[in-house]
Image (cartoon, rainbow, N blue to C red; front, side):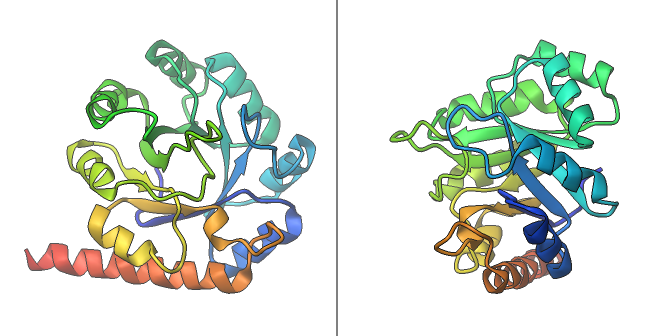
Length: 232
């Protein structure tokens, strides 16, 4: 089961960065690998070394566009990953097969705003809910064709609607940083948040100050979200 009020930082470049994030209190470290658009931040070999050094309650998350069950399960096994975030157009039959092959694997399915219409995204929530453990909303960039790590914010009202109709946790991603994550949480009311480029410096590495600020702002947002829920 995924953490409540989950905070994920994605795009880990090396062990030094992973260690820094762990010291800051980040418990979900995302590793985008085997991508159709972006260049990988780290080699599969070095990612596997980090995955296998992580111990609960800290987890490495494989972020990938693979869309076949055997390939996904095999890659997770190779890395030592227990959580996978799927951004590809995977068929529901493959998800069912994945659950049979790797029943202990936690599966997060992306819902990409801008790549699909709101109606289509709502249908996907209904279609996939019994086959995944959580969803993550993200932003499509039509210029690059990327559906993650775009640094772009999407229409949060769409993500809010998906949160409302989903019986699975919904994580919010897409252009989040210290400056907007609190407001995003209060508007969307997600189960977790994810940041990639929003906590990086000009060199493409994670900035400790930005990471710490992101965590502080996210935690404040989750507290305020809980307070308003209790007052209703």
